[in-house]
Length: 191
Image 1 (tube, rainbow, N blue to C red):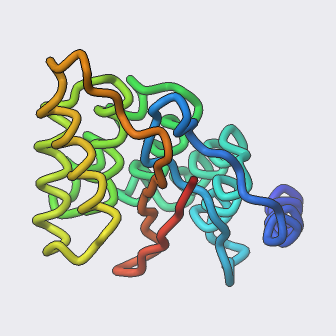
Image 2 (cartoon, rainbow, N blue to C red):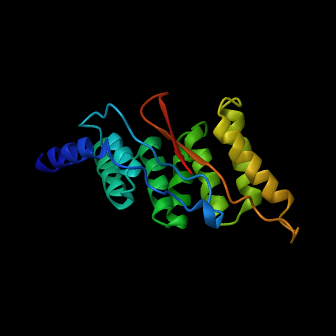
């Protein structure tokens, strides 16, 4: 109980924190989330984890997601969140495993498809990432400009992968989606 009170106080304090840098777009890393979470529910471990992610406290967010998994079970939301935290901690293999496990539970979960595409891009598996982004885009019915942009970037990189003159644009905005509960999506953005 004391831990949850501490996390609640921490979460309240994080609401005004500056945005974190996420993945480094200057090195060609793309798609990293950051932003803020509003109206947190103190007893929701996922919401606490999302607030910590938004504040750039990825290890703490990972721990909060583990606690959410202990409380709620390993739902698609928890597995997807753990995958995203692992991505930011540089644990790409673990991130990929978590996101694939999430998709085994729910093959229509758009954020997990998108985040898996991010991991695959980071692992330079551009062909598979492009297919994954296509799936995310189709499941989202093309409603997300951010997923469309992820797909465009992956497709462009795939088409130019053997072109030595091709260099990726350096000034990019990166996006990721985090799902909070049933049907409610929170868009997080980095620059």
